[in-house]
Length: 147
Image (cartoon, rainbow, N blue to C red):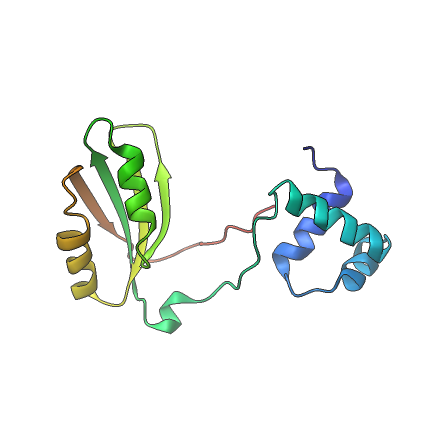
């Protein structure tokens, strides 16, 4: 499905504030509220809009550590490991990548003990060959609403 200029304008408003009413979005972009409703329904149907959620400040909730973990899985076990990793509550993202490693995991932790437990216990799956963990020192930008 292609996204036209009206869809793009709607997406930008929804990404900026998903709580905006259809009427408010319509006023801001110069179309009718039924047009906005119809377009949003279409974007949801085609899974361009997958869901709605709040963006929280993890550090203010006590999750001061962000880890970027490279994972090498046993041959033929990549998808199995990715599915397992995606079920952990601390895991924010799992990316299947190219290069020397099979996947990248982004995870948030309250402290070093939580991170250590995750690395030693949760990443100890028999189908994981090797991991390489990186700690984020400063988050310069973290924003996935770039559309």
